[in-house]
Image (cartoon, rainbow, N blue to C red; front, side, top):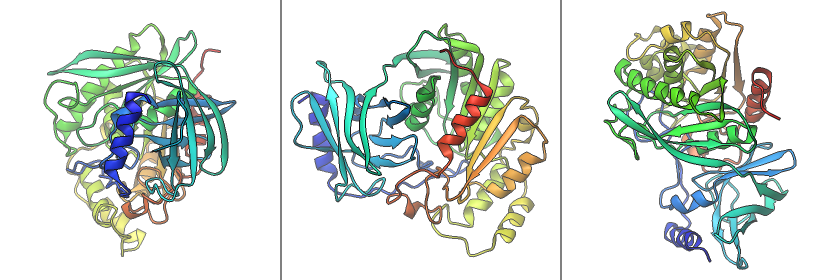
Length: 410
């Protein structure tokens, strides 16, 4: 048994059968949580899962294993936490999954990873969630740890290059609120790698291997400005890489990163597109007023939508205001929201974006989607652990938009 697999099995034993329910934070809140796509279950040892992390391809179908050990089917949207299972032969590693994203028992199916001589997965087979037969090969990507300067900090990052000669379109992952490392948005990285992007993900300043002082969680003009400077530095670094197509570099901004990315785009003339997920188009104070109606995704608001939206629109424009950056965002951009987002006022944001009358912008609202775009009944934290998939249409919408706006080497 490889050492990493033994360590992972030990961590799973310590974690027991606990069910984790992540507590997503809004983009402007001071909290250590974040959108559901990045929170890892407590007690799970993350590092050994990095050996499984990557894209696995079966014909035209792609699967992603994240740094956190999540299995994701990019066609069906099914997502589950993998747990070590016994019974594997030498040169193999077996993992099971349960009925819900973070509900591991009873075991619903198993996936077997074939390992090379160094203990690295090269193939996966078995029955995936949704009774999907799997026989997929791991995509051979090239990852390089890098560093680059930003004002008052040195930012540590990983650049991952997809297979093929390139040059490849490039994308910088801009994360949401919190002192987050480069692996937090592992799902986003897998999505873009599966499409052929070169991906740069970085540790926020003062976090992980990046130097400097973390500016804080609250979405003040100063905080968003500092994070935009770091995102801009990341984009300039990616633009300078020989494997990257300099004509096709953009941002992926998630939650609070949806405030950061448009501001960063103003500072880098070479940015050509933006993909913004659960990104607020209102001020920080307006976002906070909206989130308070649900206790920060803890309960369904008692007030009707008309009352909530009126209160959001009437709230003083305090905190960061994205309006100037949005007015200057003259590039193709895609916004994707969950209809049941309890952190970001989707209806108000959609109307706000429409007021700019920019035909280069596309907005999608996914039925049943939470703030992290997980399909739930009410968009609440309490529904995440037992959830089974992302909101229908998410990955298809991203693929269709990318196909219409970017080209990839053949």
